[in-house]
Length: 156
Image (cartoon, rainbow, N blue to C red):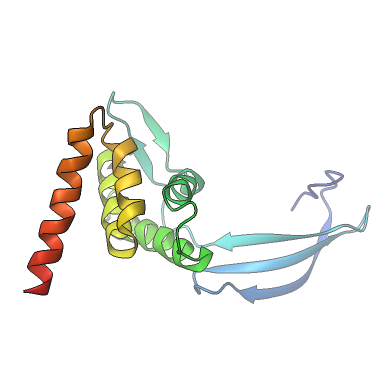
């Protein structure tokens, strides 16, 4: 692992432990040259996932992009970092478990919305407004009505 401070290739692992969600390992490392310490996170990757975009272009799935989008939707909401990490890990596991190596951006977005809906309605609406490209206030009204309808169905 290359040192992020001095770019030295030789670093030593000082401590390893499973992350809180149990899907990754956190390693504390020290650089042999500059002495700086830093943390890395390793995750199991079952297969390379390719995302097929709406225009047909293909790109490697980027977990960090998904995580960033969800964090933006949940900014200033009462959702912990641990909940966000569990949500992202759950989405990635579901994508990997599908058995498909190519997945559409639509599938990724729908899984993210489903997960957000279960955790925070405001975050869900924020994500949906970007994902579904809301252009008018009626778009917000429609999604809020659908949330209210789902709540009414589950409380019956």
